[in-house]
Length: 134
Image (cartoon, rainbow, N blue to C red; front, top):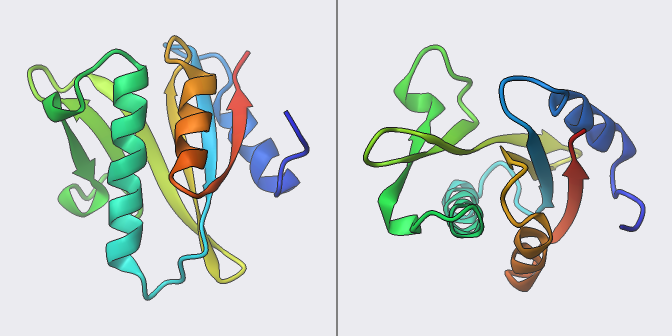
């Protein structure tokens, strides 16, 4: 892996992957979207979430996005991908406005195809930094 585009964001993401109930990896998706591009941010979140779901062995059509706007316990730019049947965790992301554009930090189970996720996100046209947990 090359050097991260944003060392501070990489370090913070790595800290959030510290061992917990499940082993996680992460991806920092760097966009050119500003705060006025809500529709594009939403679509990017959905598209990357579908990639993660598929690379984690789920049919993306059997997952949904649970958003921070749905729950007062969530931040407004925090979203989760869950399965339809039992609301099982597939991924979580946070949309962070940094220096005028958004970076989207995704977390997902380490058993997902990390390299495949990164490659597929690049095919969408985004720069992405992979972050591996312990």
